Image (cartoon, rainbow, N blue to C red):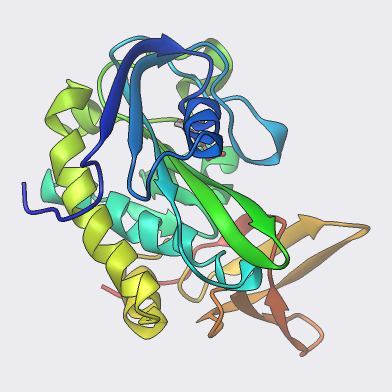
Length: 265
Ligand code: BTN
């Protein structure tokens, strides 16, 4: 363990509704920066856009970190990209060919994937959910929730073709074998983020992206936009040239990959 602050207090639970709810509760009662909650199962694991997160016992890593970062609320969103880089690096250290899909997915591309898996950039290995509590425009605390599929996830039929796990790629099957490595990498990337080194995070993210030069469809709000991804903007949004030639920054929404383009490495 090479860490200075992340996970110095590690709260290990057998089961809970959601590690992010638990972390939020601890933060409200004053838990310090870097406190980490992990659970062997979640009964109400939450994902982005109101989705649930499949959290069977002992199969996935379910983790939430309390971050007290003294910054403006508007500067926080790229923390999700920093965490994505750390999760992707962790997967790759087990030789899992993971890639990143904006804004918060870690996926593994597969050959002959069905259309809905191609649209996600591959089968989903991990997801990140950042929740912020702010006051007067400043971050009071954030809860960075990470779900990483590690062992046999026993997916329900509707998820079976859409998700993968480290063990399916000959990685470890026990989530406890992954915690330290992920926290080490996460602390390093979070330090870069806190120091304002977004350029490094953007470069690393881009190098591991599942959507470099991809043609995408962005759904969100009233209209759907199609265009080509150029990369990330300075603030961590998606830099897209629309089919009618406009350069736009996408800051939220659901991105579907229509054509993945060529990976950059
Ligand atoms: C997503 O891809 O939609 C994000 C999924 C985040 C899931 C993790 S599991 C640990 C933490 N607790 C939760 O309830 N959600 C996050």
